[in-house]
Length: 247
View 1 (cartoon, rainbow, N blue to C red):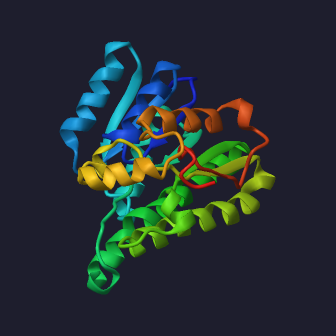
View 2 (view 1 turned 135 degrees about the horizontal axis):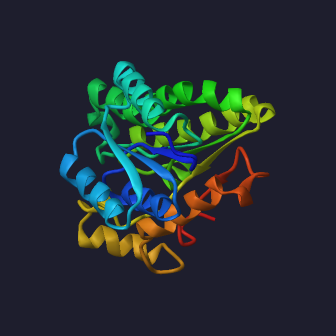
């Protein structure tokens, strides 16, 4: 299976922002690689939705923190679609916990998924992008990577690392015609924030000038822009759709 359309690989594409992004790319004719790790049913649901409008997609299960699994995923993707034009590093985990209670394994897991996963995918995507002298990498951080969040020190630190990674890599691969940008979403209505109680949600809304939660589409729309030709002169930037929460 070898298509002429551009191909996008989206990590963590079974739910929330990743799922919406996969559907939007497919609706515009992109070949889409739906990566997931644990949420198989949701990944299949995204795949079926794309197939319902004759979009082109494949599903691949891989833990992005494990290099061998990422190697296999990229090998499979190249076999099916020949090349990857756009990489969206969306896979991530979050946890709310007092800093003094965070275990070493929880700290390591936070960085393994949110930072090492991005490192693994970028290292495997870049050789081909450098060869063709074009490509777009979009990393998903968080407003907490900009401002920090109480009881989310490990999450905030990992998401801040995504921002630093983005800026440095953009400088390094810019001469090869590759853009690297970062999106730092505000509070988005996804499963990841589904465990927040009503009082917390209310407090977050009070702190948001637009007085509403963001939707997965709000972030997917920014991803689509950064992946398009309209963003060819944008690299190393941190864009934060957050309803005014952080200005």
